[in-house]
Length: 241
Length: 132
View: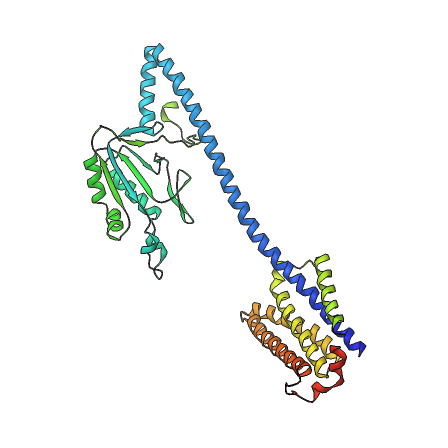
């Protein structure tokens, strides 16, 4: 009889051992998943705040350069001429904040109430292609300066998608997407209304709208300067040879 | 008498939480099925002890072999693309519930006078020995 109790005890002992081991193993698996997510989220947040910090620093330095340049340009006539030319080029290239008349286009994802659960969710959100095509259509309408959610579009700006977010100038955007373009308002409106992308979104039930700014009175369209890096490594001017 | 196996269970749990068995995460799935097999064996052992047809050899061999066989089968199923893991869970699940309800019936038969006696085996002396 004692032998039987002892056997049962041994069996129970083994059960307790594997039971606790398994519970601890499962817990450690859950912890690992949660931890690695947190680490990644922190990494992204830290890097983004670092980028923001450096961009602020960069804009301060650029401001100082502008001040110095302005003081030089008053001194000598030849240098002043070059300075004026430089300012013009910088304005065209997108390194100065601008304002003017033009168009403001607002695109947003469908409200979640309007989305049928059985439908493909990707049909109810704005994709990077939509932004890309509309920006292109505005360029067709001779837009002189364009920004998306205050990211200035310059010659090297990209509009791309990583996972489920849209990046412009390597900065994450969130809906609603506000595209501002400075140019002839009528031409921009024509270009937008003949845009097949805009038409598709509008008749597809997306909350899209546009607003014209036609007079230089007040509430001009404000387009910020490009704040990112513009160092080059490979390009070479032919004149320099 | 029944307190000793419970103490054994607690001791095993304590030992398991003090020393950490280094098991690769890949094998977590197979360990979980081994745990189910062990639970089944222990419950089956308790039941047979109450019924009076307890055998040490059957219990220990069943515990080790069932746990190993379940883990090996689950692994084999993964390699073959057949979900034998689910089959093992269902079989052990059914057996665990069957054993639990059998134990419940046996205990009720022992302690509740008006409850009908389930079988002759339950009247064996082992019942008194184990439950005392």
